[in-house]
Amino acid sequence: MTSGRSYGGLTAAERDAERRERLLVGARQVIGIEGYAATTVEKICTGAGVSTRHFYLLYATKEDAFVDLYRELTAESYRRAIDTFAASAGHPMAERVAEAFVAYLEPMFTDQPAAQIAFVEVMGVSRRLEEIRLSFRESLIEFIEAEGNASVARGEATARDFRFAALALIGAANALVYDWVIQPAPPSDREMRESLGRLAITLLVA
Image (cartoon, rainbow, N blue to C red; front, side):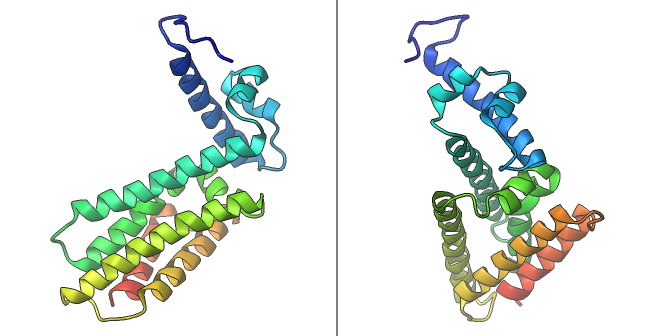
């Protein structure tokens, strides 16, 4: 058990938080570049500058660290979408939808390892990771359904099955970003943003 005494001006909890952050940065780089299967705890620790002893004080397994990393990446994307949508209140619905959806994916376009983790490496790791992935997907679907129905009530969109539209949008985005990650000569991130924004408008507003 980590001592609760202050050392170097930091409490035990603060030292653990700092090590966790370094481990997640290390895991992002190793898993995002070499892949989950090729990643070992030792590689993560080397990249993070953290001992394996301290790793196992924070995580029981490599998968536990990956779960923490995936949750952090996906939660950040979700927060970006919600914040962007809220900040654009009063703007045309088509504009808001496109901006929020692109904001959700923005971290993936600016951080190749993050895209690799969120759209490639997470697939097939374990039943636990799949349940977490589906839970985040359901949160996004519920948000799209609620905002879609609200836009119909305001007369900004025609009534439709917004759950179906959300599933189609998320499924298309997953396929497109997956392909973008693995292609040797993918389209530019600007082209991807524009294409996904148009797709969001078509499925949810047009």
